[in-house]
Length: 312
Image 1 (cartoon, helix red, strand yellow):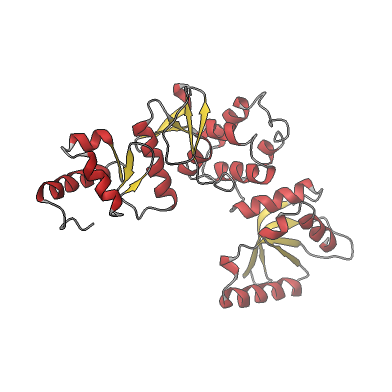
Image 2 (tube, one colour):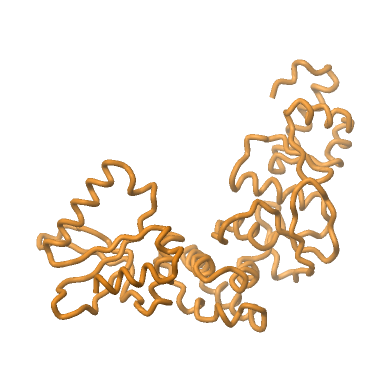
């Protein structure tokens, strides 16, 4: 930030405020400005210059380079500093816990015991007062616990996104939280439709795409027999690790059917294409078959099961 064009007093105030913001995710609120001996006019001037960015009413962002999860934390910090008693909840809480929660809509989700009007940013305020055991401190931010976040989201998400969330929670070591969350869900709308997902969750799923593919297979009547299975040649050389494996095949089909969920980035380079082709040829030479599917295939519920049935 270039402060040389400011007056000496304003330059000193901006430097003090920058130090304050660095300790709270790049965010300043009115109390910080007053505490630094600065004025609202200075804040308006820095916003007009494009140096600072308005967030919630009464809060500005100094670290305007922030994106992704860092920006999510800044919005959450602004809410925690400006809305008394607010707790970060829902999809925003999932993001801060590093858990997937479907497509993000850019809105900030809060739990609060009253109506909130803080302007500037679309907010979703869930009108409830979280119990103390349902709130954790994430580097100074009050956020619903993983168990409470799972209980809030699983009944509301569509099935593929809900399973991806549960798989990711297990992968991060939250087995006990899943038990608690399933109990907290009891009686909520949407709980019955998602009831089988708690038992179907598997920590071996390595991505949202794998979770979606597995659920399509499960719902389509062709669940995989195993996940993350290594296939080696006669010399013990690793040829592939199938995301999903199907062993029960027609008599004329020998070997395994491997299903791989291909994300665009890892498989789009020329080197990856050559490597994938070599692996597929090596698997076929040993009597195995390989089916590969992408995100687009999961958008139609019956597409992946149909691919698997043809290959079985």
